[in-house]
Length: 516
Image (tube, rainbow, N blue to C red):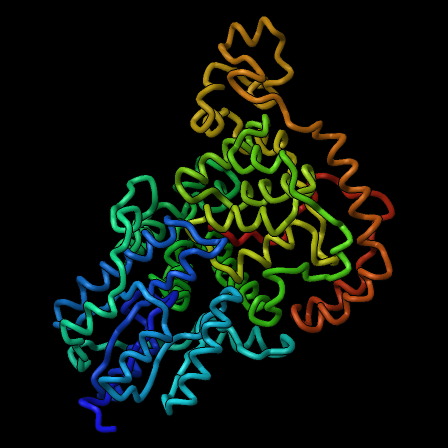
């Protein structure tokens, strides 16, 4: 068959930027007509972890890229369609020489899609070149030399992208109309001021303001649900959807490490970039952790969904710090890590709810949802590894320590607006007279607690430890350590002593990474 043209396709995924972009850099070097495409796949949009807030952010990011590329007369096509049917259609008109993209550490649905695309490319003689990113190593069965490889990636020069040298391929109008797919819903194409805006320009604005002024309070406010909204970098959605490359962010931190006021915050922030790749590598190395406990022996926990799940999901549990955090998350897509951990442990320990359902609910709410981080971190918070320190974040203690003036709780729970401290943190303890005086009737204006916290948590800890200490759970640990842990950590885990009684409810957590 004689083709009208030989082309290459740059397939955008979670790399929605024009800087430090290996597939675009390679496309320019190859000097072939290049079709730049983002597939907004209906199957992915409809997945259980998906929410319109994600696709609005993606759409805003793509529109920002379009605006920049239009200056070079280069189109970016947003196709509301599945990948394979589009490739099959294109092959009727052009010869696809190469498909260029980043590797994706995602869901099983994206893994299955990539496997089908790979098979198709092999059958049709298309070279699919995938580029590693963020120091993630595909096919790794252990972590030997992984840390060295990550450091090399972070310190390497960013990929240069000169669009003056890119040869665009422009679809014919009939082909574009055929491939474009149905119109996107207004909920995706219209902006929402309550969420961070997508796009490379917005990402760099957040990055620059963080280094210029906001980072000075980073360490001090990291755990504060209200103040962290300004003092944290707020770069997580831009990293998750690829508006910024982790390498460029890391190298920006190096430029500021000699600033004495920023030295400690930069070390802390750098460690979170490192931990991010560490957790994504876990999903890359053990895909089943999307569905099953990392330690299969912990299936015996047998957590189930009951009527309390919806109260948790809607922020109606009767525990102010839990409810304020959930309502904030529903409204804005972001809360700091400590509040995320509290939501996870409240669901899986205090309420003993199924971890998969809770993880999916939070995935839909997190604007910065990244599968690799999300599932590995949630499993750790739910106690499903069998070797991490158990942590249960007491919502009363968290409020007393990190919302000392009650500003965060009052902002998101207006029904408690007039309730003073200390009653604000335990409103169910108010007398009937106090409830009337502060215009907050428990069970009417604000829910009564859906559970006796101390009793439920004590029971959950005892139940958890009886299973975690079992021979079945312990038998899985060596293989898990070998596959997922750094060699330097394995001896530490081997030598740890399990308690014979339930742990303290506020055990010190390992490094926080989500949402920072």
